[in-house]
Every structure is written in structure tokens, then in C-alpha cells.
Length: 469
Image (tube, rainbow, N blue to C red; front, side, top):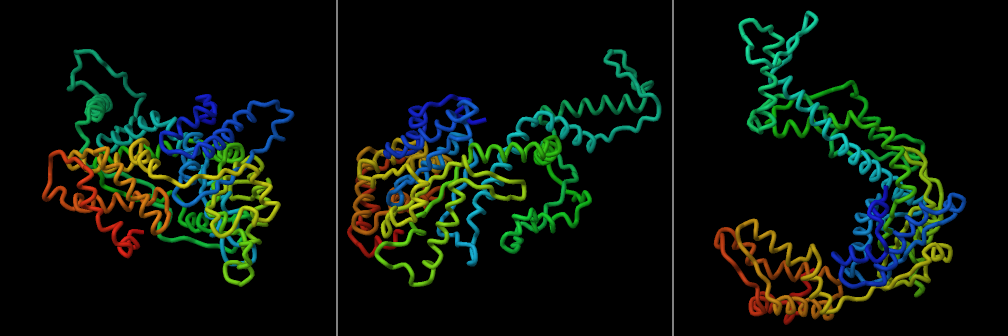
């Protein structure tokens, strides 16, 4: 179920949510909010025409560091949709060494399956926790094997331990320990549990011939299943850690894996979002630099391979066939060297909505440093607060940081908001090193004088500024 359907978010509400994290770029936010709402409209449209309504893919054009990737990422989180970010430059056309473009859909499917399984596990967490508790009790107080017809537990006050059976005594002891477990009295006690052995070495990755996955063969799983037979390993852990592992294992047993795969496939097809970054790198420059060999040789081939995926086709994955007709594709690129018109006409036509993102100004940097929920200033405040040091930013200091970031971008290389990371890192370098050895508590105000002192050399010395990214 889409979050947009649960919350019934309108395009204006979606933009308001994106505003909490991304400064400016109103036209881009407007376009993606309409695209997301159109999914809800399609799912609620008349059945006769529902399949005919295809998404309008978006092409975001703008310099690096202005928020293209962040818009797509936040949109996917907002929609609780399967999301995959890929870089177009990593793909090559069929016949060359490199990743096949269809692998982006396979990766998206894996993301969706993990997402659905996690949701299913969350739903059965209560029942899984009960089963995990029983397993811990079985280790602490092993149950007595019943030989007869059992016993009737007695809650009366006239219980006589001398006359009680072993089963009854065992059950009463278990109940006492159950109470202690729930009260957290046994959290540090170590127990030995049996857990499933990890599936092979995490450092090992298996690459099969190109197209092998299309045949439904996964070499990694095949090798992982060679030792299948319920192999388990014993581990000694505190009850607090053992409970988490056992709850996870029990939740895994309770979910229907087949149903999870089917739901994930449906979710990919109806709600999937693929963000194709650096799409300008596969467009041949009109200046005539193409055709010199090297990486240029397969650029147009990648575009032609990408075309059927974006247009709508069936991709074979190890979990089943995925139709890409209703997956939303968001292309992104700086288009410094090439232009959108340098892409092959067919691919241009598959990205009908083009949005130009603006370069960030000094005022934008001020907003970025103060307004978003995840603003860099708030991140540094939170980090130093964990050490017992309280940080406060002066308004003039924030304005000065923004001015320096804008100046360095203008004089060296415009890398957008990423410049703020390097500036803030330099600003706090001395302070982060001094805490907690020299400074372990107290309140520090970052004012304009402190900013000028720490960052004085960056703008004055152009050679030095080259070292900051």
C-alpha cells in the first residue's frame, strides 16, 4: 500500500514534506509531487483505462550538489516505494564488459523483497517475541518430559511442593523465570543458543556469465545451499542479545516467503522508482568528441539498451518476470558538456518532463544551514552534545559560512551544497579534536569572529582551497 494512499497526500502536501529537507528547487518538487500523486490517481482510475495510463518520466537538469538526488531519495521514502539509484556511466551495451542495464530492475526487485519481508516480520514481531521467550526459557529451565496424561496447574495458596509432581514444579519455576525475564532481571545472564550458520562468507561474491540470472540461476545461492541441511552454530550471548537474534529467527519462520515475493513483484511494477544519475555521461557530445574510442564507444549503445526498459518491457529476474511499464524513471545530469538534445530522440521522448534546477546562492546556503530537519548545523550540535558540549550558532556566523561557501564555489569549482560539508569540516576541525580531552563540558557560541579565524586562509589562498575537495 502506498503511503500516499494511506495518508492521502496531495501534491501540495508532498511539496511541504520535501521542503523539510530540501531548500528551493520549487519546479522540481512540483513535478515529482505531481508524478507521485498520479500513481494514486492511476490506481483509483477506471479499470478499463488503468493499464493505459503510463507515468511521465522526469529529467532533472542542473549542476552538482543542488539537490537532484536528494529530491528522488526523499520522494521514495515518502511513498514507501522500492527505490534504486544507479549511475548510467556504470552500464555498457550488450557485448562489452560491464553491467547489463536490466540489472537495475533486478536490484530494484531485491530491494522490494527485503522491504516487504521486513514489513511482514514487523507484523509478526509480537508472536515471534513470545516464541523467542519460550526458547530462552527452554534453555534456562528445560521442560520435563511428560510420561502420563499431564497435570493440572494449581494457582491455589495451598500448593505443597512435597506433593507436587516434577512437571508442576518445573512449570512453576518457568513462570517465575518468565516474570524475571519480562522485568529485565536476567538481561546480562549468558546463555548458549543455536543459530543458523551465515550463508557463506560475506567477503565472497560470485559473478556468473552475463545473462545467467535471466535463466533463473543464482550461483551465490547455489553455492550457499551446498551445505544445506539445517546447519547451526552455537553461540554464547547475554540474554538481551540472544532475544534479538531468536526473535529475528522466529519472525523469519512465521512469514510466508512466497507471498512476500509476489507482493514485492507487484510493488515494483506499480510503485517502483529508478533514479538514473549521470545520464548526461551516456549522451554523446555534439562538439564531436564522440567516436574517439574508449568509454565513448558504447554510449549510444547504452541509450538503446536503456530505451526498452524505460519504454516498458518484461525483465527476467530470479524471482519472476517484472514489467517495467509503470515504473517511474527519474533521469538526472549536469549536462555541462553534452545537452539533453544529444541523447537519441527515442530516449528523449521517454523523459517528457524536463526540470532545470537552479544553482545555489548565498541566501540558499543560509537556508540550507538553518531550516532543514537534517541541517549540517543541527548535525554538529547533536554530535558535540553527545560529549556534553553545547554548541550555539550566531546568525552572523551562519551568514559568513554561507558567504565563504558561495565565494569558494565561484572562484574554484561550483560543487553546490557539498561545499558546505567541506567548509563545516574545516570550521570544526580544531574543536572536534579538542573534545573531550581539552574541552569536556560547557557552552560554546560559534560567532562571526570564530568563523573568520578558522576559515581565513581558505578564501585568501586559492591553492589551499583546491585541497578542500
